[in-house]
Length: 167
Image (cartoon, rainbow, N blue to C red; front, top):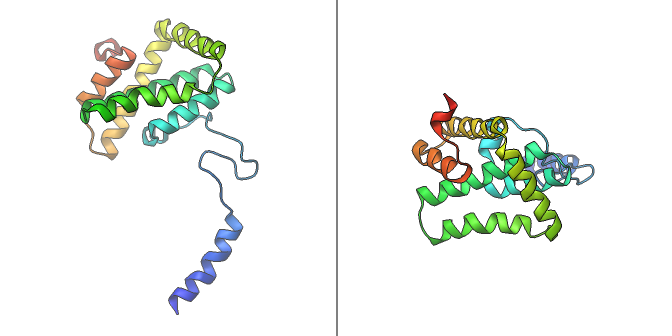
């Protein structure tokens, strides 16, 4: 009897709510991956989601968010390779970015790398990105088993963030 009540309640809920792919507007199906997100939200995102967000931000010409997602995704996969060393995590680190950029033309890829290098050569921008990575590490310490030293090593290795430069 309880099962029947549950079905009668849940069916209208599903019909009224509809369904949508995460990261898309249910009305239009358009991506909203480039929207601003809290540190807590960004810390919970998988590298694949960060790379999809990077693509969306690149299309919207939102350079700062493009760089953020690039940095977080790459640092994430570098972190995975440190805490779970092996060919699978190393391959994953290289493959995710490659797959993400595979939809771009050669000219678009060149523009992407040029934009990325220009922004990250700017000391203020580089510090901003490194501060964001540190904040994500701080957030992850609160919610999961997390190797803080490995995160610092991955942010240093991937984004050349030096923990001492923050002081």
